[in-house]
Length: 351
Ligand code: NAD
Ligand code: DAU
Image (tube, protein in one colour):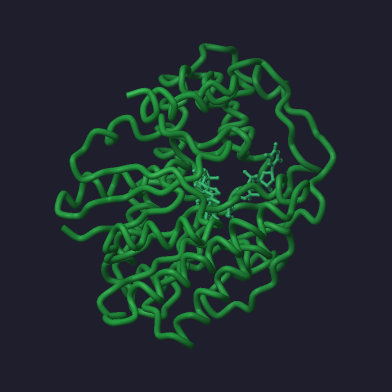
């Protein structure tokens, strides 16, 4: 049994990666390490929590003593590192939490892996999951972020992720730690925390609440279905070359306002409302400070070298996502009420 440590596995993308690895690789033992911040929710993993090749450990990647002990207890073959503070608006309000987890936490993991693996470094793999936001913003509509684009982070979130990426590459260069890095565009799909644009809009449409569009809604994001990101991570973890970076994206750019209108249309149909009803909820609000104009990923390297392609169109992915949220109202209610925080206690403390 190869043991793989997945950090941040109770979060949005992490839970999809855990699910995929637990189901696809019964011969791997998946250890999910998560601090269960507001963004971590073990109810994201109810379908795999009893699988024999899955276990959960509650802990903080910033705690060096704890991380050292975890590596001493388990002989990890590899690490897939997703744990992070991930929301740009929160990084504007409280940058230090982002420095702690995204920078210090990542360096703790790198350090521990380097020491634990020093005698057979080449037999291991450290996968760092990062974001397209490290490349800054694009203005010319014909340009894309490639793996060669110079870093130009512009928010505390992206600056912390850029810093962590630099440390990962520095550990490869200096200590020959076998690393791979991927930089992905905006994800959407099931279990998405409703502070982010798509789940927030779905939630507010259901509740007939205002739909807050920042500025004029002209910012552009490149959306990828989260299960396609998890497939890409699987492929890169197994077939990516050491020291390499792979951009992941869906070639699927949307202006925020157009995307919100599309969601309103889909939701009107699903909820049996007259066309145009939900769009009346659109409310323009003060723009995000330093709001990046456009992100767009060139994913050709991943497609050409490793044969990855997205499996669903945006229409299919969005339809699945909306249907999931409508069918999982309890999940959404538990998250918005804060009840989800009790799931850990009932599953892991009281048994
Ligand atoms: P998320 O906020 O939904 O989940 C983050 C998880 O990390 C949570 O379960 C949280 O409890 C855990 N965590 C936070 N701090 C921790 C700590 N100190 N120790 C242990 N666990 C901790 O995030 P997400 O959207 O799933 O993103 C996962 C990763 O993917 C992040 O590294 C993010 O930068 C990257 N990413 C996200 C997107 C996106 O669109 N969401 C796109 C590209 C890359
Ligand atoms: O690009 C990848 C990144 O995508 C990830 O690294 C981040 O972890 C993830 O949070 C996401 O960042 P964004 O800032 O792009 O996502 P968010 O959903 O917060 O916002 C998407 C766009 O919608 C952005 O232009 C801001 C805008 N927005 C967002 C919210 C929450 C609104 O107009 N209104 C809102 O209420």
